[in-house]
Image 1 (cartoon, one colour):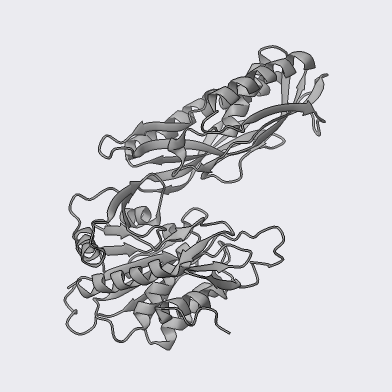
Image 2: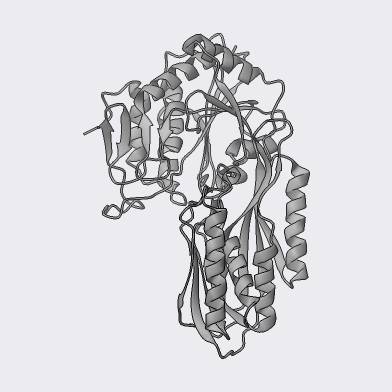
Length: 479
């Protein structure tokens, strides 16, 4: 039995519920892409489905709009799959258990996928309607946005005629996003050699940090556990001989790491512990506002493998001590906007190498290239190499944007106030599309969502209703 069938707008919530019944985590999008294709087939709509599972569905203009510019409606098909510990659901095989709590839609025990789902549902409701006035609609549903915008990167945009691009993937009503940073993932690898060393084994842990999204929270001054580990290893190596066995931290490229752990062998355990205790006190003072629970601990450990030799240890410690990280430049055009930054997200140790993956972001292409060059130079001087993955363009702010002007006009008419126009430091798919489609006029909007990508995620029904009315009116006025 449908859970959302009493909610308005009925078609939007019907398609949202249908989508939620299909497992559609990142990397598991074939079924949901086929659902979109079946939708198009049943209605005789032109569609283009690629090997990556991206899909474009096209509906021609209604009467009177034949000469209007096409409008692209865009969202993504994949969601972040997270569940509470006691939830037994297999999100790779089972759909979501939806519920309504007052004004909120949620999924019992799991993430909701509201940011991707509501964009797809609204576009489908428009494609399905026979009573809405609109120009040619080109609905673009990409995949694997949550793990690096891989679908948008792979998409062939040649079927698209439009240059007005409405992304419906944002999470706050009343905010129009009009620019974002470009970026990449730069992976630095230092080769290491290993040799026996007679010393005391210790486990060193930096923990208690808040972390956060490396684009949205990079300006908060929060500590990066892997860079703080570099300080710890350096401090200990300055008072006693130290050999690094392993060092690992961070779970995602685009997240500020909260915890990093290293195993080391030291010649003088007492001196090493004393240096760590001194640095622990210093860190608690430095981060008393941003990361008040930061902790550097040293406990007796066990070396599961032969440690790195002296040269390899020195090079790895140097890298973790000297690597650039955090904000490089603030925007001179937009007050408070981070222009360029980088974040060491994932740090791992293999038998023969240490690997550090950085998320590099900038709304100025030359500064993004500069940071890549700095990391490459540092790694090369330490005997290593760099590889760059997932390069995507910045979405630059347009001083003249007919789509933005129209949307502001409609918003003022419906809400009685102006929307907030915002540029963000995080990357969004609009940047990739802007790089592929010169002259693209983009705006990103969305209804109110709270605590996205967690099992506490909630979608506002009232906000969704207002957004639907808003989008319909924008299309109606797009002659």
